Image (cartoon, rainbow, N blue to C red; front, side, top):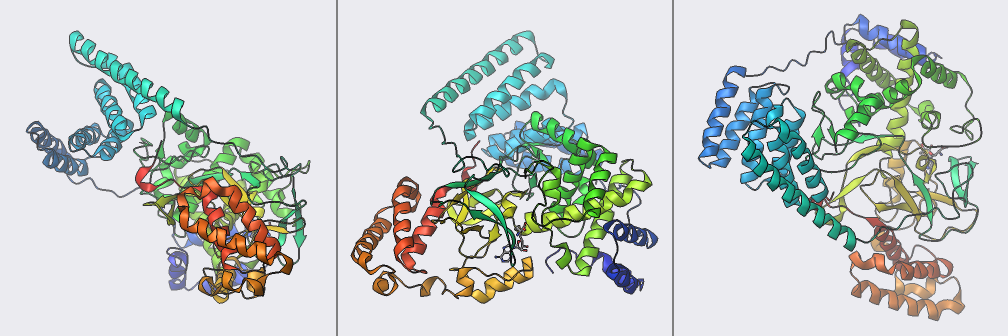
Length: 632
Ligand SMILES: C[S@@+](CC[C@H](N)C(=O)[O-])C[C@H]1O[C@@H](n2cnc3c(N)ncnc32)[C@H](O)[C@@H]1O
């Protein structure tokens, strides 16, 4: 089963011999609210919900933590930094993360890491101590050290900021006036050097080109190009179609996530919905210690967006079954909109939505006919395949929503009984929308490449793009993501010619030349509940090694009068592939566009050189950020 701990709820209900009742109740025509309330009553009755927010963590030896730190200090003085760092780690185990003792051990370990040349760990520790209960009279030390480590690592902008904070904290420092004066002068010199470096960097830096939608913004769907329209088809539902000829390189969509959040614990990504920047040694939330921020500004904005309410329960949400990261995101979504609208209005809107009959074509458009990615109902009304969901999965999502709402109530969130059904049912809908459009369709989410290898990428965030979610799938995609792959704003570009009237399709992860038809159809069916009817599936195109190549050009030429030109261009292209390195393909995009256009008009597909050129264009459009050289 693709969900973690899928039998968490049912196994206990099976033991209580009530699963038959659940099946009966869930197969009856019930409203989403009734289903949620039934599930809630069931879990309460069988005592399956937590009674307190108790993490059950025991701190081993709080009393010995201080003496371990002091032993670490002695080792540090003797310049035995590795041993000192180990001793500080032991000290950390004995104290609560909110205590001063913890912050001191964390800060001292960061100093040891600095001397060991482990600048990244040094920064992580310093940031953690800054966010914890570190004595304010010593804070200047942490910021000065962070500045030095950041400067060494090449994060000059951040180093400058750290030095600036250090100078403001120096007033509280417990040292003689003379020492303070000397220290201030040294930090000011370091800050000036950073300033000079930054000026130099700006002077030599190329200005990144700004992307523009081909033909300008679409009148009704502003995240799409004016050269497309939304149309219905029987087998795919809504889809995006070209109203003019679109060419490779044309920008067809620029979308921002409605809601997004980090995907992994081992890579630090800012938790604030409007940021999501990748970095390292980011600040941790000083209370829950479980989410990271670039700076205090992002943290304050995220608190206002709802983290203040999620903070006390995030630890527990992370333990819920299913996809805890997605459950966390569902809570973030709910809290953001609850804070924006207030409970009464929120419930009114979600109740109206579930009671009204949804038109599959106009779903997500507002009262003046606009489909906007930052609109609650646009995101909320995205396809969630609810009518195709098996009963046991729907029940599972209801149980998760009951758990999540229960944690929120335990943390002190006040919700009148009459609103519980509406909020609970809305959480179930949010979970199902995220499951389809964000978890399963996470292909366009921010990513980093692994060790300079484009094929090995790590997804770093979960992102819900309401407008990009309008694109249907093809195993032979004619549009693909482009630009910086870590970016939260997603640009989609044409990678093949798209004549007027043709549907624009991206891939949901299955590409025809990499997987045979059976396995692609299996994924489409199992994960997305549809039968793919793209050209490679209908015509059963062969996979990569079996695709006809240039030797059989005459057999595949559509226009015999063009055979000589096409043959000669194919030879040139093969020379190009030998002489130009993949990293330089982006400088030859116009050439690649003209070659693919020539083949598109004159050669029957699949044709190996067409597919090679297509892959080169797709790769050249995307700019990879590498895990080993994460930049500011
Ligand atoms: C992200 S939505 C795409 C937009 C959707 N068609 C709509 O009406 O809003 C994904 C859903 O679209 C449909 N779909 C996407 N690609 C398809 C394809 N190649 N064949 C059939 N259905 C497809 C499936 O129902 C799938 O669950």
